[in-house]
Length: 122
Image (cartoon, rainbow, N blue to C red; front, top):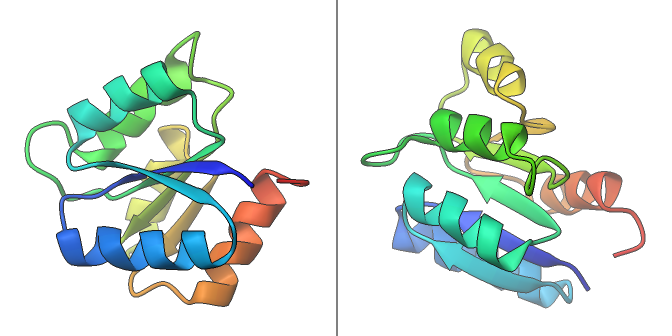
């Protein structure tokens, strides 16, 4: 079982991700914006972060960059999960430190495969 932090300002998306993760035996942690997501990742040290991009205040690209460059959080894989599906967004997300980039609505099987690839054995 992995501890996975969902960082998304949409209660509907957060609920959907939590349902999928818990169905597959993972524990879901939640933050509703980028700043809270960074703080929670530092405090909780989750196994993986699912990061939305479009959020008030600190956006997902900025939060990803902070976590990827942080001494205490650089080891945590980040998967950007967003409606932004342009190739430039994908490239930018990876340059900020994301290990993968998925677009909403996310296919459950693809999401679980991505998680399994990034945190094998969890």
